[in-house]
Image (tube, rainbow, N blue to C red; front, side, top):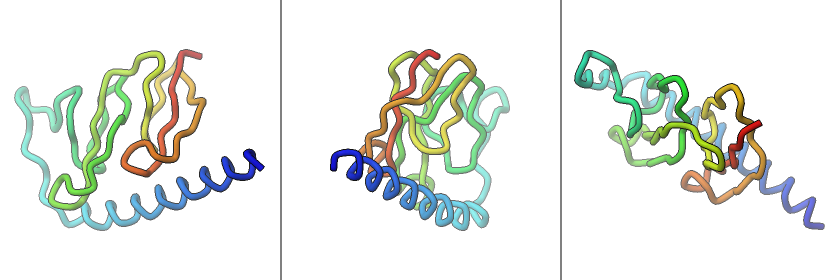
Amino acid sequence: MASARRRIAALAGVIALVATVLLAGAATANAAPAPAAAGGSQIAAGGWSCAGAPIPAGYVLTAFDRNGCGGAGSWYHQLVRNGIWTCPYSPIPAGYRSTTYDARGCSGLGAWLTVRA
C-alpha cells in the first residue's frame, strides 16, 4: 500500500512538473531578456534566475517561485553538496545521484535528495 502511494505521489509530481514546464516555457518565450549581471554574464552563480536561464556548472536548482520573473517562474540555484534537495529539471553534476523523493519539495513540484555517488 505504501509503495502504491509513493508511485502515485511520484506520478503526480511528474504531471505537475510537465504542466509547469509547458506553462513557464510559453511565458518565457515572450519575456524580455533578463538584465546582465556584473561581469557581463546573464546570471550570477548562486541565486535566483528566470525559467530557461542557464545554470552555472556545478550548481543545482533548489527552490521554485511561481510568481518570480513576472509570473513566468524563477528558480534558485546553489552549489551542489552532499545531501542537498534538488528540484525538477535540475542538472545533477558528475559524482552525484538523486535518491529519495519528496512530493512537497520545490513549492509542490517535488524534490529529490542528491547525494555523492
